[in-house]
Image (cartoon, rainbow, N blue to C red):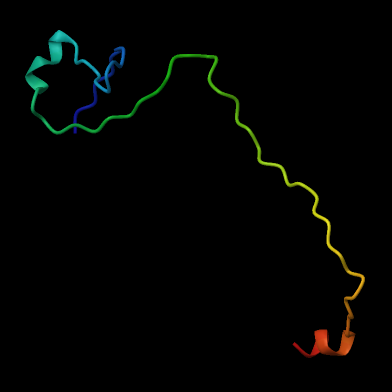
Length: 68
C-alpha cells in the first residue's frame, strides 16, 4: 500500500486529486478525511429530563419484589 498526503477542497461531494497523481485515476483508493478547520462543531451531550410519576395508588410488596 502506498500513502500520499495532499490538501484539496471538497466540492459537490468530490475531492480533486493533484496533477502529480493523475495516474491514480481509476484506481481503488482508501480515503481518510481530516478537516483543517479549528472551529468545528462542539460535542454536545444529551441530558436527561426529570419525569413525574403518580404513585398514589401504587402498592409495593417487598416480598414479591425479592421473590423475583
